[in-house]
Image (cartoon, rainbow, N blue to C red):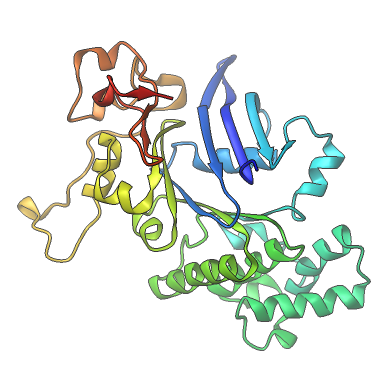
Length: 327
C-alpha cells in the first residue's frame, strides 16, 4: 500500500525580475495513514508554500514547475480544476494560519461550516446546519447551538481557530493540513488546540501534516519531523531520534536555540543561528546553509549535498555523512 500522501521532487517557482526563482527545491516526503508529521523551519523556508501546493492553491504568479504529489495512487498535479476542487475539503482539509482573515466576516460561523457539507455532501440547509452544530460541539466550542449564528468577530481567537478546524473536518477528510494553527494564541489556548488536533487524529484515524516553526510543538505532538531550510528538506526522522541525535547542523542549531529551564546563557543571551534564511533568488552556491554553518567544509560552498540515509528512517542532506548510503 502506498503512503496516504507522497510528495516527490517538488519544485515551486515565483518570477523575480523576469526569471523563475525556486522557493521549494526538490522537496520529497511522505505522510502515512493516521500519522502526525511536523514540517518545521524558520519563516521563509517554504513550508506554507509546500502546504498550499498539495491543494494546488499556489497564488499566482507562482508555479509548480515539476514533481509529483499523490494522494494514495492518485496524482493531484494532473487533475482537472473540477476534480481538484472535489479533493479540497472532502479528502484533504486545511486549517489556515490566521482564522480572522481566513473566515469570511459577513457570514456566520455556522453558515461557513455548513457550506462545505452542502457542496460536497449535497445536504439540505437544515441537515447541514445540524451537522455544523455537531462539529462545533466536537471541537469544544461551548454552547454550539447558540454560537452557530455568531459572526467571526464575536468569537475569541481560540474559538475562531476551533471553527476553522470544524470546517476542515466537515467532510471527513483523510488528511488534515494545519498551517501554524497556534499563531497569535496565548500559551494555554495553543496547548488546547494542539491537544484537540491530536484527539481528533486518534478518534477519526486521519493523518495530520502540521506546519510550524516551533520545535516544542513538534516534540509534543508529532510522530515524525521534516526540517526545511531554503526550500529543501534537510533532515527527516522519527521525532524521538531527531531530538536526541539531530544530524543536520541546521537542526542542531534550531534545537540549541530553544530555551530550557536552567539553561545557562552567556551574557544573558540565548543561543542563536547566525545570519538569516537567504532570499530565494539569492541562494549561495553549494549547500544553502553553509554561510551559517559552524561545521562547514571547503566543498560545502561548491557542491550541493545529496540526501544520506542514516538508518531507521532517518535522513539528512549534509556532507558530514558522505560515505554513507545515498538515497
